[in-house]
Amino acid sequence: MKLKLIFDEIVAEIELADTPCAKAIFEAAPFTSRVNLWGEEIYFATPVAFGLDETAKEVVELGDVGYWPDGKALCLFFGKTPISTPSEIRPASAVNIVGKILSPLEDLKRVPEGLEVKVEKA
View 1 (cartoon, helix red, strand yellow):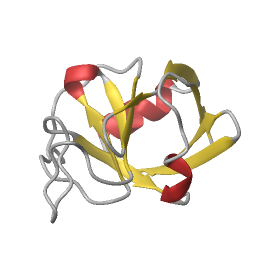
View 2 (tube, rainbow, N blue to C red):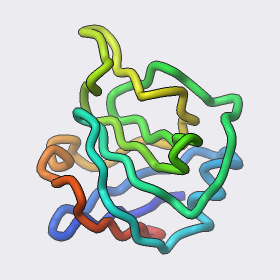
View 3 (spheres, rainbow, N blue to C red):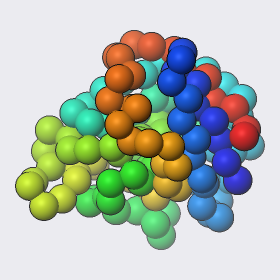
């Protein structure tokens, strides 16, 4: 399962995991949302409501895609957040790991706060 995230001229592709939370996000597409930035993390609201599952982590890897239940949001981790340490990337709170970013992470650094994102099945 893949999703295409369209941020105006920047297009990112993500590969979703085979989990119930990831499937719910895939099934919700297409939808649009607005970009929020938190350090080098893009997050945006989804129409999906899901709790923490067995994939939940408080420390993520570079390129992970998370689902943040507190904000019903998809999170793209392409660098450090404000509460990261030099050796780890930390979300605001635990996220379900729902996939990986396939596109170059450098592209995501050019996405501005407040931009509309279109989420489509790839």
